[in-house]
Length: 102
Image 1 (cartoon, one colour):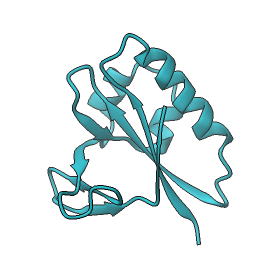
Image 2 (image 1 turned 90 degrees about the horizontal axis):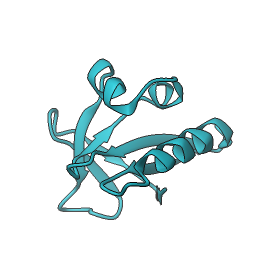
Image 3 (image 1 turned 90 degrees about the vertical axis):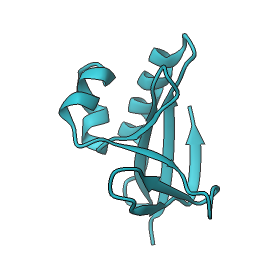
């Protein structure tokens, strides 16, 4: 069974562009047979958004990707903060086995 990896990148730091490039590299190289990657982008304002993995690999700015993709704002689940995210629009929960901050 595949493990779900929450790949967290971006953020308020001036290094957010490097973080984004690193996340795209990890996304391209991770063993897709063993892991399902769930990209989570943190904006300059500190908001968390889920991204379609294919969107992360596209050559465009993250801001543009957020506007064009089916991204959703997410947050850690209050009932299971270390293992779940909640989509703030649909209220659906997403189980995450491993969080990998970049």
